[in-house]
Image 1 (cartoon, helix red, strand yellow):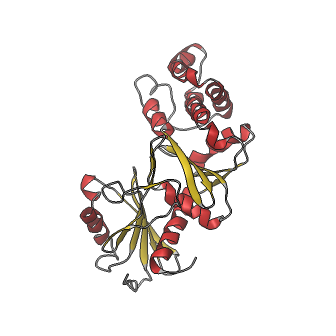
Image 2 (cartoon, one colour):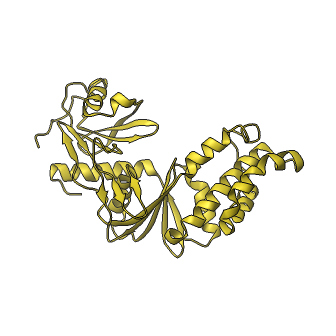
Length: 294
């Protein structure tokens, strides 16, 4: 691969992640120091080779430089997935200066991972001896079993999306605060559905009644809604965390309830920043492309 030498401001390459919130970009120099961060909105036309190239060409200070760009999280039309068990990073799909990293898939139970595998690769780069489970909360929370620097199996749960949909639903939107937290309300709800996941739907339906009859505050209802959903998720994900060393990757607001829930079960869970892990994974992928060593 022929590399661009970089721009006058030291920009040497670009790392990116496609997600539901858009295209997050890191602009980096040759030593992988972040020079700038950008977030671009995406539409259906952007999620093509030509669309991504056009978006990047319009970035101030980047246009026409031909900079190598490594992107994770691309859909199946851009980067086919690889079957687990396997290393989290695989050969990218090369489109000119675009290098699109493949996601992972699992046949049974059927599941897909796009983007999370790069954060897992970043964790492995920082902790090569890591053996355990990586939990990545988000719109879909991913639980991945990692051993010998490979993703062995994984399972996704739509907890984040369900929380957003239910909090804005006709039944709950007037009872759930847009922010705030209450630990006791979360803990009680977590215990309910972790021990009795079949009670989830009934417990959700009871939230408006609790607000009217018992005076449940909107902040308590928000924490209780999260606790009910995460409790049901932990019940389903028990094979992934029981007796395991768990790393939870995300921003503070996302990982805090998961860490609290896991610690309550005696799980030796620790948190980490997903963005930093994703960037580390992108750097590891870039090093492979250029034949560098980590």
